[in-house]
Length: 141
Image (cartoon, one colour):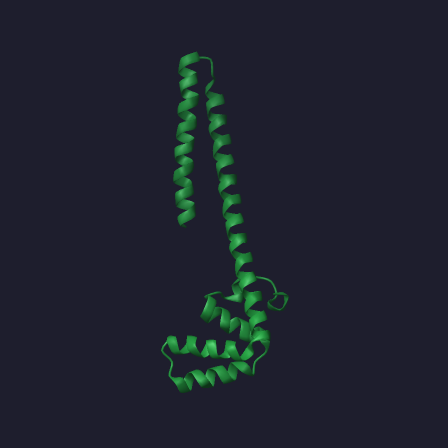
């Protein structure tokens, strides 16, 4: 919501400046038709909307790709250093207020699951990323 509000305010200021420039020429020269002023405003509005939409899409795509790279790194760590990752996961659970016994039970159960489930739980608790919200197949990551 914030990018939309800030983008709208920025675009409104830009359109106001654009209109003032056109109206300045209109009053100075007196030869610009009202239709030209309106068409210029509409063109500016459409260009601004397209610009904001593309910018937002690029931002979201970049964030998605960064999250996917983090998931791939977590997957590689789980494959290469399973004991270290299990200990790290226990520490994360402990930091979230679980007892030592509960941490052991959860970590032991998680070690019995497949790699996709391990990546999912590590990502959600450690990276604050929900792999299911990224789209695509979990196996493709």
